[in-house]
Length: 174
Image 1 (cartoon, rainbow, N blue to C red):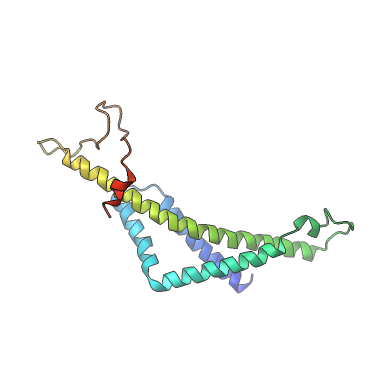
Image 2: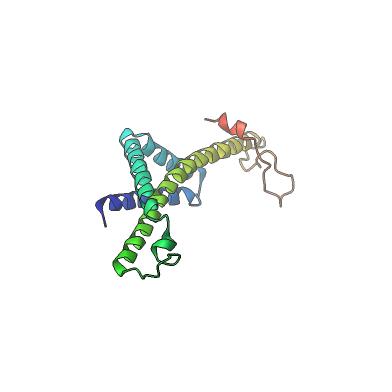
């Protein structure tokens, strides 16, 4: 494997691990905040930003280069070719290598944008949960009961589903 592709592959694996961590179910809101702060803290460091943007640009260049080689796969394999000629094995292996590299670079591009969006979503989810928990603590009874329901829930003990809070209220927490 070419060293450039190896670096892009490792970077794509790192992005995949971060995306997987952000998609995992979280045991508590504090754990979500810790994980989101860790990933956001990584992104705030200048060398990480420059490295990620450089990898994104290299990914885009490699993706463009590989997709140029994959524009006409049916003609290249001889399926729609006017001349009925079989391709030698080394040409087929080169085309499969281009296809593999297209998956690596396309996956890296996709995961970069997914990772940025997931950090934003997790941050908003934490802010919303803080609002809901903060308002439920204020609504506790006089005996100091902290297990009061969030605002908007039904009085029925079987119904624990809260009514949605507008996102504009969640932005005030930041």
